[in-house]
Image 1 (cartoon, rainbow, N blue to C red):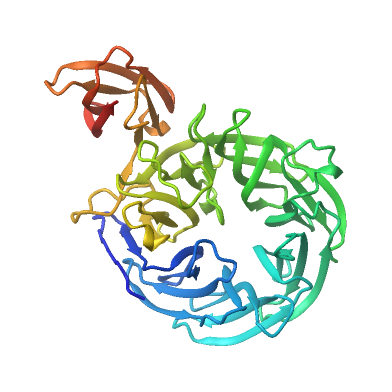
Image 2 (image 1 turned 90 degrees about the vertical axis):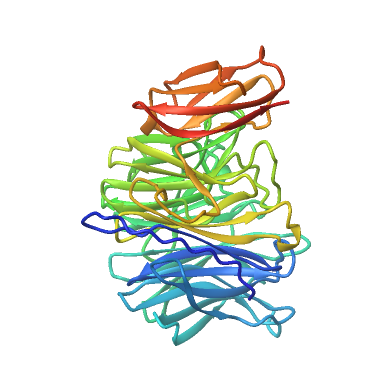
Length: 491
């Protein structure tokens, strides 16, 4: 693969060095990372690629990247017409071995298979196993480990064209890939049933899904299927706080868990939100990050939460998203958004990562052993539409920073963003809580201050109706220092 690779490396001169990097790569194939995990000192990326936009005929890659962001090796699974494969989950077994879980359809079989591999960190395949399903295609594969050390895999199954009828499949395996139990659940709405994420808590599985709203009186956007140890459906429960679509859940202990997803903050638009629930879905804590008002923020579409430790929880998504990977609005460029919360769900900070040449979508993420986080996403560059989607990897420290990098990075990290740009009568300043009480200053080209605002909230608007058309430099001052600056254009 012809790669466009930019690697930036920085070592902090502190007790625990945290490397930062930004790595991009891509060619004229569509490339989307589906999962990323740190195993030992390396990162492993499962991704899909295809020759046309979001093709159902997709093929898998597994890449190994070192701690500095260099891609060291990879496995590409060959393209065969009528066949597809993908790697949707990586499960570390120890410091040198891991499992991959995905879907596989051979062109000589009518139905897809759940595809398992065990590999070592040199990408040597130790074993490979497949389990047949009863539908042609898999999607939205999730997994969770239970108290006995076995793994439950949940997947959406679909008939594909023309009807796209959906159902759910659950498969329990050992860590050696041996099947222990399985079950199909087909009593959801076949048009909307989707697997979202899985948890194991208090002796039962919780499968977070959509398509079962009729069981809850349409009282929630998505639902929880309570499954017993035999994978039998015990109860359908609503999910409070209107959590919806792209979800990730993590168990805290046997009494509580976190759930992150998109949440309706206004009637039509989302923020990236996190809830802490007990085992019967009483809300113990709730918070969200993103833009209030008429700009949607989507949670990362494969994994949107990762826990570094009990007091450091990362949530991630895409700011100013519209659900279309291949669109890029010049005045509202999509950015990757990352937030960090403490154990009580107080938001410590929110950072934004983007550029003025492309639009970025966060796909997946993983907290790293140094307390930071690695983000994997894709970007669309309007000036190079033939490249379709390329891949970006961002490694940040525990403060969300990639600052201090001496070479010019492909993206920059921001504690605030100003939009729409170009704009008209209002400027929106979206910031993280870490810079509360900062001052936004807007100048004309003569250096005169023409507008200013104290950032009391993470979303502020400033009326600039009286200003003539033109270019206006701006800066944000925090504790006497300029922390952000740029230019805003009034049309």
